[in-house]
Length: 341
Image (cartoon, rainbow, N blue to C red; front, side, top):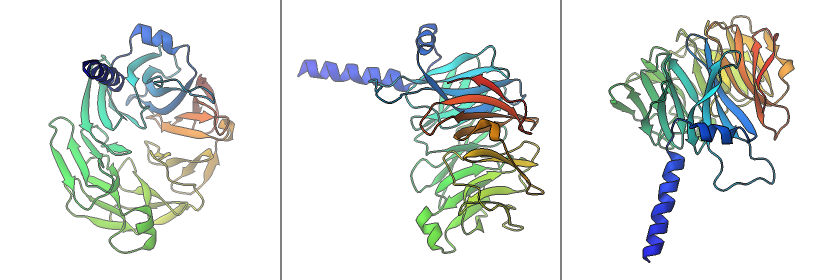
């Protein structure tokens, strides 16, 4: 019995080491170079001089290591030089990375939101998160739905003060100024069945002033100025004001909603990038669309540069292949492979 107890404690210790993120060691980095890697969730630094992404060991057919190799978060110059791991030991690859301030990156993994500083220090911000999280433009507020079906939590990053928004269930997304929040109320089946209590809602970040802006809506994304919200509904991409007025169809066949959403406003607010097999950029004012055919199918991640002129894209060449990291102009020109998988 004592041996079994010792073995159980040892296993828990090993699991803890794998779960707790930590700066990547030189030995871990060297071992990582021997693995086939797939890239995801690319992001730009606020000043546009650096980029970051998640590196996830690609487990191909017939290769099932126990335990699976951990994921890492890397940073580099925009051209891919000076690349180095920032955080390692992630037992689950991040589904989202946000870079709101020059020296700080927020990411989620294993049901937690964590903050990593470029000096290598690290801390957990929020436990028991949902499938996605959202921040305001400066990263001072964080919203998440820890439990399936709500309530949504809005957290002040510095003080740790939390506000629970009752009646708010899924997919919270904060406005750039952090004062308002959009979210879904109701499951997909409930929203499709109809009823004024279901749909896409907006409220103040303290939970007051809740009102419905659309009867059907998913993957809501605020414009950089906070004056419009783009969302998916029944395969279409639509835009509406936060008070529910001036709703308009932007793209009739825009694909489906994903977690996290593969849809992003350009920082100047003039274009929206979305994924429907290929990466597509649509002009918000005119509705004119441009397919970036050069990347092929299988786009898995997209992020605009702060000047709205370039995009980081992760894409795979086949339905089950690994994803490489690319940089491309918003015009579709000057495609560059930054990290091949």
